Image 1: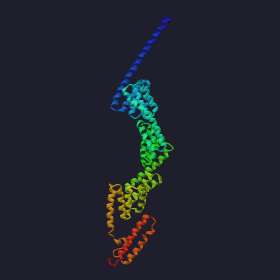
Image 2 (image 1 turned 90 degrees about the vertical axis):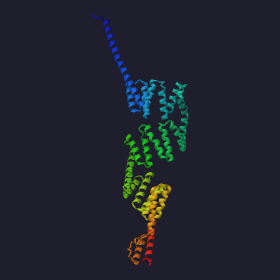
Image 3 (image 1 turned 30 degrees about the vertical axis):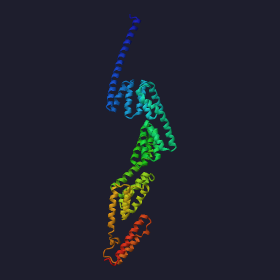
Length: 455
């Protein structure tokens, strides 16, 4: 009979054998995982050296899965994230690398740099001080020492920039903010403040250039996209404004500000496109109708009002509506006195009204602003020829009578046309000038054709 002690001893041996087997399996698995992780780490490093960042990232992901306790793997993956411009993804990996190896100077340096670029100055200072405590006598530590010396003055300059902005010294604030942004390019607050300074100065293009990166620097930045859409709207770029407001709606389809703005700018962009297409197709009346629709959609915004009125001026002039075109072009030039395109359009309108002297003046004014303007140069030549030809008057044609007309018929035609074109009948200044010219031509024709010496 087997004793109780003998039985227990056998059980102990069986347990030890099982544990030994389990340990062997576990060790084999760990060794296999380490080997697999090492392989992916090497492949990721090769891909990184070749500049193939996405492939490198894929290998480092697999290396982390196989060996989640290797500080170097997290550091390598953080390096790839930074190369891809994904600093927010890099930080957790740098944190983990430092957690696994607290004195890992390369990771501390990298994290300190990220914090500095993000404008997290307290965190950056902490990392750089930690590095300096370990490498104070290291000649390669100069970069860290320089950063430590820059952070305190940087804090002061940022505070000073905010005060200058509040005191409306926008240029002074821009100078200081630009220096700060050089060191902290990923700090959205600095860019947003500089954008406000540019807006105050009327430089909307530079403001948009500052707001654009903040849409990526802040998560779900619907206010940034809304701001950017409004800036492009104020600059008169409906298509880009529409693109930016769509990005806002991707984040929040029911956004209370972005959705109504989207509907308005979408309609406006369509009208602008159609007006331009009608102009390109020389469909002048349709061009004018669409441009007037733009003014109904946006009656106040300077850029769109300017564009719409420019289309009306151009298309009326090309359509031969002389007096109406002159009024429309005057409105454009009231807004933009050196608009040489409007000057050329107004010259065309004067040609339609047969006022060649004024057309020449307008084309010459356009050339004074842009000496290389081909349209203005050719316009002057054309108007001068028309003026020369106009002096070879067909007086019978002016009065609308045949060459066989007698004195009585000539006087009857004169009286009728004189009543029709008397300047006192017209209120509009341009129409009155045109009527005055016609009245003078009619009087000259009557005088010449009534001369007994005319055969």
